[in-house]
Image (cartoon, rainbow, N blue to C red; front, side, top):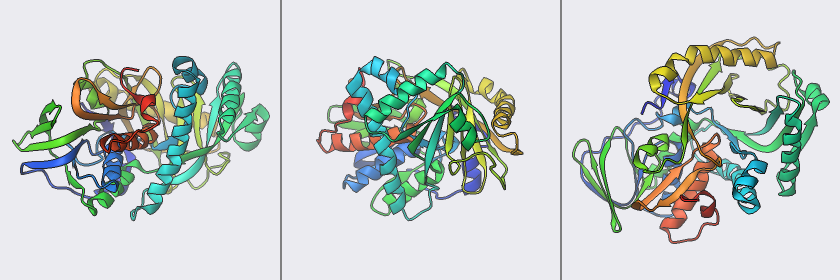
Length: 401
């Protein structure tokens, strides 16, 4: 599947950070992680930290799939509001999912701090906007429910929004727990750090055959190499749907742009917080360390890469227009425009863990708008499962729920 198109900003900005060899010999190891994007990198990093022998295989260059197209906003909010998730999965699951996602941001911050390479990680606040007056009631309920479980979030009414920002909205929630990162650089930093401690990474290595048994998994590559492992971790994102008999996500096309560097962000307020809307399709915005604005949205159902790519120009113009509606005094010029694919689940939660049709296999499917935080939780769950430990969050994201 073609996961990205156009010209994503991060690979152009960062360049070719690290190269890895192609697999050219048979191998045996305890764990193989299939996929070298941000999810696979987090999983591999956690496994190496736990002293577990691990190999990463990717059919592309590392981090060149969906990771390169990520706008890399880190939020605890999922695609389903806390109120709606409570209706779908019950109070206990909903509360635990939101708190776990909130805590994941701090865990990502600690990892980024201790990596020797730059990752573009910055703690931020996040502004969640009501677009229509009828959304006030929804956001008010969210505010009350989040505060009740210890999440720090402020209520802003229309006058508060107008006082702090260049636009007016009926209401907003200002969350204190959010961040942004360069997912492309973060992935390379995780893999390079783990490689110094024993991780083996092979990219441009396509796995064509997967034979799982109760005793392990045998993989064969397009070049005829055979890899035998005790555990296989699928960190192949939206392409994993091809392996699952029962589909667990709906694929969505999303669009993003990055501006030329700006000298002024007049009216943004709150130290250039993340901004996103309570609407479908919604708009989300962030800034970069070199003064650009990255924004995304205009989502629609994925049909095929050709149709998706034809819309990039139109969607980029629409995103720029929506930005100018928010910030009429900021002159913005689009420098990069691209499209990507992501998965949306019925309850908004990721699918992580074991699946009955695939013995000796584990899945880390960080579906949803905040897939990086889900990937962190997935890395913890899979590490603990392989070590024979109980992870309290595993039940939240299990298959068959």
